[in-house]
Image (cartoon, rainbow, N blue to C red; front, side):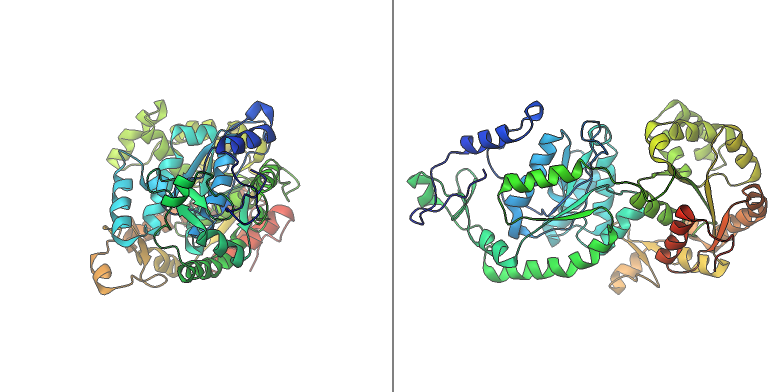
Length: 489
C-alpha cells in the first residue's frame, strides 16, 4: 500500500492484488494489533478529514479518539476515510460519521435525519448534534472511545460541540494541494456490479473485464469538485482556531501508510497541561451566566473533566441506577432533590480515576452555604473558584429570546440567531423555563445565597460575565495559571 500503481500504459506498477495491499499494511503495524484492510469504502456519503481524540497513553483503554474536523468534501474521500478506518481498527475503537449516524437502526432521531437528508441532502446542525450525543452515550463508545469523521463542518457546529462538553484531545487535519485532490477525485471509477471503488492512476484493476465495465461516479466533475473545495476552505479557516493547542496538520500527499503512522504517533502523544497543578475548578453564577460554555472551554484546553451536577442527576435517572430510582420521584414532582442524594451522585463521579488524575471543572453545585459545607466536609475542595456576575437584563436577553423549532430541533435566538423565514418563526416554541418569571426566580435564589458562598470561598475570583465569552475565558484561564486580583473588570 505504500506504492502507487499506475493505469495501464503509464509505466506505473500494476497488477498488485488487494490481498498484497492488506499484507503490506498488516506487516507494517505493530504485531500485537495487526489489522487488515482489503479495499476502500464505497463513495456513498459525507466524509472528511479525520479528527482524532485519543487517550493519553496508547497502551491504556479506552482509546478516546473523538471527533473533529470538517468535511474535506468528497474530493478526498477514499484516502482520508481509510486513515480513520485504519486508526479505528488499530486502536479497537468506534468510527462515527454522518452517514453512520443517520443509518442507525431503531432510533427516531436517525429516522428523522434520514428523511431530512433524502429531501435536502443535509442534516440540521442541532439534529446532527443530538444524534451524536445519543451515539456517544452508548456503552461501546464509553468503553472503547471513538473517532468522529467529518464533523464539525462549520464553526457553528464546532462551538456547539464544545458547549456540550464534547472536546477532543487530539485533532488531525489531512491536507493536500487542491490540484492533487481534484486529480484524485476525477480519477475515481466505480464497478457497477460490486460497488468497488478504483482509480485510474493509483488503483487500476488488472483484470480487463473489470476495466471495461468501470463507470465514472455521478457528480464527479472538475467544477463541482472545485466548488466543494472552495466551501471547505471557507469553513476550515473558521474552525481551526477552536482547537489551537491540540491540532496537527498532516500532508495527505504521500503514501497512505506514512500518513497513518504520523497520525498514529500523534494520537499516542500526551499533551502537557499548561496548569502547574491538578485543577479542581468551581464555576458559580446565575442561570444564563455562561457556566456551561466556560466549563466546556476549560475541559477542551486543559483536559479537565466537565462535571455538570444537573446533567449527572438526569443521567442517573436515565440509566435507572440505584440513585436514579431515588431521584425520579423528585423529578416527577418538580421539587428539589435532597442534598445528601445529590452529594452521593457527585461523589461517585468525582471519585472516578479520570477526575482524580486530570482534574475537574464543576458547575451547578454548590448553590448555597449548606451544600458548600457538605462538599468541603467530604474532602472535595476546589483550588480555583470563579463567580460569573451578569446583570438581570442581560440574562433576560440571553434566555427569554431562545426558541426551538419543533420540526427540525434547531435552536434559535430571536436577536443573535433569528430564524431564516417567517414560516419557521411562526412555529417556534419557547421552553417554559425560559420565561421571565422563571428566570427572575432563579436569579433571586442565586443572589440570595451568593454572598455567603463568596465569603466561604475566600480566594474566589469575581468576573464580569457580561462580555464576549472568549474574553471571560481568558480571565478564567489566567486565574488558573496565575493568580488574579479578586475583582476583575
